Image (cartoon, rainbow, N blue to C red; front, side, top):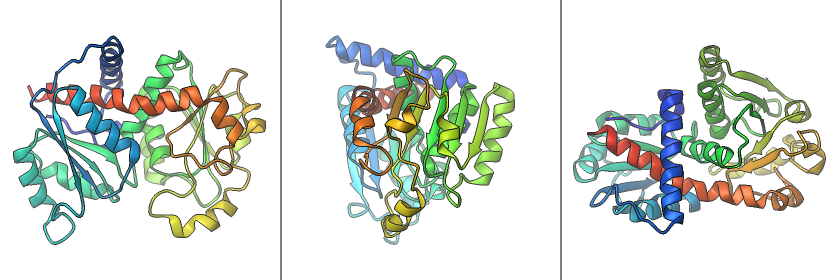
Length: 307
């Protein structure tokens, strides 16, 4: 049995296998064929953080695979209201076949997985967002921009940045991260990614100049400047992130046919301009759709590991 908590726990071959499986399932769906690989299986979805894409993609994905998804907010269960995480894990994993958790502290999902009898999927924590990166790389494969990729991440050193670091380190492409001073990536995560990069041949660079990161890039990506739980910091962050908006001038520094990715929701006029988002709308919203297909591939893959 395997859990999906971070990308660092998976080999390059396993990551590519999951993405290939997702693409295969997507192709079948577009042809009007519903593959019922998870027929009569149940996914428990625990949301301590709300989300549009995460809920819709996992719930729809389970339905299309022949299974059923249960939405459980922190108002619906005792988790966080007196019952220890390990007890909730022991109970739910005896009733369901898989668990997806979207929460704040990464330590919570690690503890849940420790006591779970079924695969646990990280739908997002404050530290990592690995399912989003599966969708991002799937999109890169579909658009044929995964070979010799040079990815520039511009913005906050957050869970998305950490996941990009691990994806690059595992798959061996070049990643440049530009963050404002004081918003750099976690030093331990960076150190770990750098060690993994030595094995894969990945090139990882970090700086505080977005123009330096974007110059010659084939992929430019960003994220909201103030994530959920950081609303009180929003005004200060807007000031601190001045010059980090991905606009037409910044995209001109990248390669001529460079693609733009965004995990959404996007705040136009802050981390990305209206013009850039709309000119790349096809790939950005295709990327959003691929959350559905990548996660279906992941769930089927995890189910197969149980035997």
